[in-house]
Length: 572
Ligand SMILES: Nc1ncnc2c1ncn2[C@@H]1O[C@H](COP(=O)(O)OP(=O)(O)OP(=O)(O)O)[C@@H](O)[C@H]1O
Ligand SMILES: [Mg+2]
Image (cartoon, rainbow, N blue to C red; front, side, top):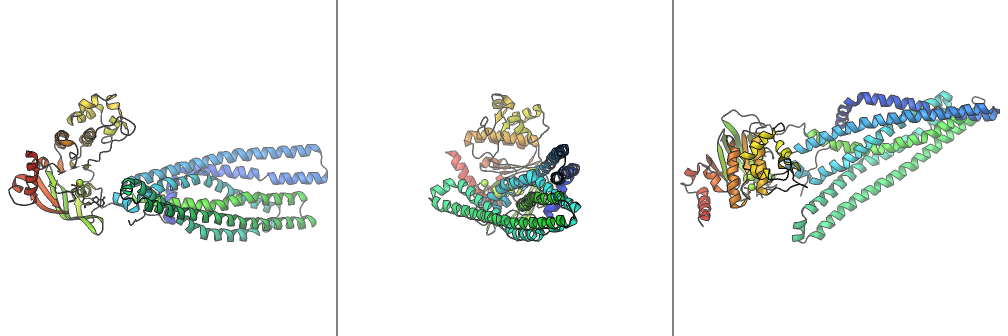
């Protein structure tokens, strides 16, 4: 199977989108940065205080002076801890809220994706974005971003502190910078493509795994289990290899950073030695400078290591925003049509695979209030036509015009959502009163069995609750249709699978639910064609006959043949 992955946003687009998502957090962000700066400045008083203790020791000062400096150190540590803690909390809150908004955008968009786009991308693509990418970005928002911010502030302010002690300390400290800069560029050049490949490999592995699990019965039937587990194993191995390459890269990255630390600290100590010998600074000041530089190790390593998380988070974010953006892309426009036509299909072509057309050059007009039945043999394209008209799939060629937001599609794949039955019905019209819901149920002959449920309308149904029969689920679907009250309804096989007694009940129910609506009915039982205003016969994706039932049975052709077979069957 060829797959076309879902889109990935380009870096610039991601940054622009991120700014929009961050805008509501401006105040929290400003507060957080202020707290972190104040905390860091307080923390930076510690090295000079320690240096002062060194000077006190070398000049033989009194005990009380030591104690006072010690108290100062404790105070500085406390203030730093409290302010930094508050700043971190604020920053993490802002990050979480932002992530929640991005995730909402993603889900909203994913739910609106055309099915064929998800199918082309493979289920694993969407799944790995919802799981892996959201996790990576979430961790970044919770810890990496606050830590990175704090590290950068510490670095900048510490360098400032060194300059205050003596500008020559700052110059010495900067000896480390070229090594670090080189290391980061060296790393980023290798890490970015490596992470991108890792993500693709993990998505491919999940895709193969899901496809294998989905297709397990088929795979067993055809005894191709070994081939499939081989394929999953190969994909997994590929993902593992790439992850190991990432770890090796990290190790080399840290080794190079240690070289930078060594060079910088050596320079600062040598500078301190010469400055103290020349009486430019005290031993305490030189101590403070060395402590400052040593204090830079952690924040620098944190910041640089976070470049790593940032790369991973950025590529995750690109993938999330790539999907979130799809919602903004216009789908095939479906202009509102003037009465009397409710559905106008012209020159419609459709295919699931480019080289296998399923619908060809279909023209079909359903006038307002009209009831049109679509018949045809298995695989003729009836379901596909219903789905394209309902907007589930986009046409490949030609046009479909339906009144925007006024069409409902009911298929036999009715989904009963887990939860109280009444919530399931209210999906169709959130504001519906209990009486309206009851009236809809009565109209579809469901009032009786609903009253007998353990908790009536409040009964939990669906996964984990009371199981509805297929016919009951269909009745719920029709009751939803009545509540949603769309002017146009498309019915596909809604009555096909219920057995003949069940089918008669559902036919009656369908008729009640379609009362007053324009309807396009995929008819498997030709009784539905008899009662329709017009019948359209589809064969191999083309309309081969159209007209009222009474006319069509009079002329030789596919419909007359279908009718004879159907009524012959019923006579026995
Ligand atoms: N999701 C899909 N991917 C690829 N091909 C599909 C898909 N769904 C249907 N087809 C193919 O499209 C053609 C038309 O199928 P469709 O389901 O529209 O026929 P139908 O008239 O509804 O048949 P039935 O009477 O069995 O319901 C068939 O050849 C079918 O194999
Ligand atoms: Mg079908």
